[in-house]
Length: 487
Image 1 (cartoon, helix red, strand yellow):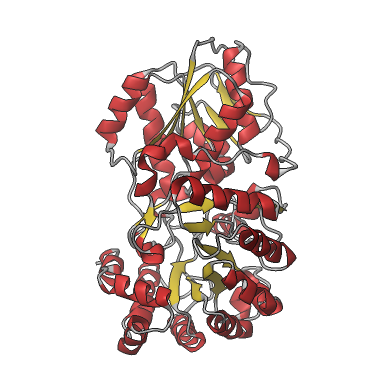
Image 2 (cartoon, one colour; image 1 turned 120 degrees about the horizontal axis):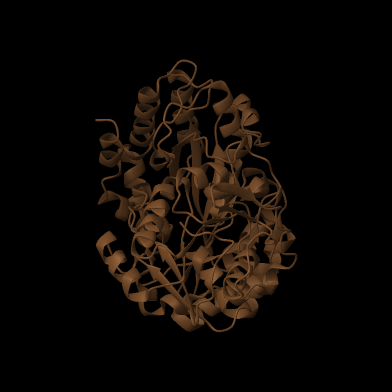
C-alpha cells in the first residue's frame, strides 16, 4: 500500500488511464462509446502539467481481457494508475483493475474517482486497500495537483477534493471549488485513442460508418430528482459551456475524425435560448447536413419551448431522449420530478411533428408500485406512443436521496454493486418482491416491443431513423436477455 505522505519523485513520470474490460448494457444494443471522462482528464493533464508521459488504454475498443491488461501495465510501468469509473455497476471492475496494478507494482499510486467513489469515498478506501486516493467531484484540477505533488516529493494533505489513506487512517480533505469557466477546458484527448477512433459506434442510433463521440455541454442539473446523483455530485449547481465552445467540439470531431454521430451527453442540457444559440452556431459552420446529434430533454422543456424544436431539427438534431419516468402524479412527486404526466403525450407529438425521433424513459419499482400500477404504466406508454421506450427499475445509487431513504428504511436487498444497472431489482415495493419487479420489467418490454403493429409501423416508418432502429431491433435478442435475468 502506498503511503501518500511519502511519495517519491519519478522521472519521467508516467500516468496511465484505463477503461477496464467490461460488458456493455445490452438494452442499448451494440454500442461502444469513447471513454470521455478519462479523455477529458488526460487532455487537461497534458495541458497543465508538462513533462508527463500519458497513456490512455481503452480495453473495450482494443478488445483486451484482464490478462492483456496485466501485460500492458507491466510493459508501461506507470507511476500513476487511474481507471475510468463512470457507473456504480462498474465499481468492482475499477477495484479489480487497481488490484491488478498494485500486484504488478506495489509502489504505484492508484486513483479512483467519479460519482460512485465520490459518494462512497470513506467506505471504498476502507474496503479496498489497493486504492490510494479518491478524487471527489470534479477531477481535472485535483488530478493535476496530485501529479504535481507526486513530482515534488510533497504530501497530499493540502490538495482539496481528495480522500486518501495515510498509514491506517483515512483522510478527507475539504471539497474543491468548481471550475468557474468550463469553456477554459481543453477539448477531450481523442488523439490518445486515434488509432481506434473509428471503432467507436452506436449501431442502433447512428447506423454504420457514422462514428460516435460524446459532447459535454454542461455539468450538473438545476433540478433535484431523488433518484439522480448528478446534481449532488456537481454541488447542486448547473454550469454550461457556451454555444461556440460546444460547436467547436462538434466541428472538431467531424473535421478531424469524420465522426458524424454526436451525443450531447448531459443528463439535462435543456431547451431555450442557449439551445437556439447552439443551433445557430452549427448552421453558421455549415455542418448541419453532415452531422446528427442526440440530446436528453425533460418533458416540460419540450412543451414550454416548442419553437426551438424546428430550429434544432434543421441544425442536425435527429434523436431526443425524454425523461417521462411515470404516469402517476404521486410517483413523479415522490421522485421530486416536477413534471406533469399529461405533458408527456404533447411532448411526443411535438417531437414527431418536427421529424425528431422520440425516445422515452420509464421507471418501475417505486415503493407504491403494484402489478396494476405497472400495467397502467404500460398502457400509458402505449398511449403516449414514443418511437422507442426504455424501461428501467428504480435503483438507489449511492449519492442520491433515494439511497439514503432506502438505506434508512431497510429497503435495500441487494448490495452487489454489479447489479446496480437499472435492469436488476435492488428493492421490493410495498407489495411486490424484487423477483416480481424483475418480471414486471420483462412484461413492460414485451408489451411495447412485442406488438406486431408497432414493429410493422416502425419498420416502414417515414422517419428514416425509426426505420433503421426497428430493423436493427428486429435482429436483437433484447427480450431474451431480459428474460434470462430471472430465468
